Length: 497
Image (cartoon, rainbow, N blue to C red; front, side):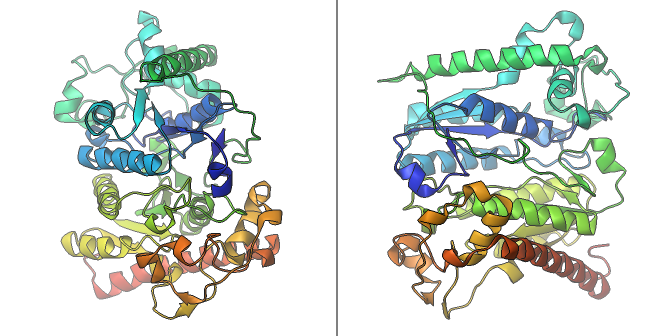
């Protein structure tokens, strides 16, 4: 398995042509389970599914098309068109990078559009050979009837959560069944039927059942994926791969300690006094032969974690892929189209507002994500009752002068050395600076001025500088967000109350 802890060179030198895309969700699971359970499950399952296999494991796409579940505190969902475009953009980017096959592991309960999108990728556009599977369905279809239906937070999901994430499960368990067909959720929304945000019998859950369900899900998913891939012309199962795997130090994306985040329960989020949501945005793009493809994403996760803790805000999961067109000449880079990113942000803002929060701060560490600024400008004009700010104003260079340090430089190298030292390839570090204006990204991309993808001096990177820079960036971002909202409140009392 190769993943976003690997470098673009490692991807380029590999014959791997299969990508794995896990899909999560931030949707209500009742008062007893984390609101981002599907995200957590997607990340762990996809890693174990991919380990030892010849695949490029992508980061979890964290949000689903769960618009039926909007209105609960902390929920974030995309409309169908946005989800459609996200999948199409990712498939297109992978195809450009030489990937022939895409396996989508979907853990959301409301992603109706994904199956249709996969069908059209295969039979209409023929962009890539795509296989879609929802592993939870294998458990639901084999569960004993006494366990009852599980439309979110029921016996099956609760059992799996108890087996895998026991410290995140809260008691007591309260059973709920609406007494109407499940389709009523599609017409009326979940909140009109279940005030607690779940539908099932969590009281029937046990960690033993969870372990059995999880093993069944894994075995059946592996069997189905290999069978489905074999249906394509020249089809074959996923091959073995013996590369060393590098992953998050604790086996899961870091959460937040002194605030609430997507790993909290809906009850914990509801009882938090904050009216501010933090949205991290990073990127998956080349960072030379010395640094991992996920460098920007890792920075967004770490800095936002600290910002949310400082401001005692609600932390949304990071959007891992945004606009990275200037790096598409390097394998492993992923990108969305700018208007797709715009709609992702707008959909999240709509969800945040529907959940009762009134302020949204985007912590953007990726300089190429320019579309955030005009999106924020227009959202603030169109919806004055929701105040939105972005740290891109302090983190992203937007001038026309020549710059010496810009990408895969000593600053980013220092961060990787400090927080993911196994992913820094010191022997591969090459110093280079075209010392020209960043506008070349608009014309010839990174490779047009730096064949190695470097703009700076990564050999000067130190772990000590990485720790200091992360602390400084988080402090500056928190101060900027706090001051901007305070200024808005003083000048425009109807905004950002």
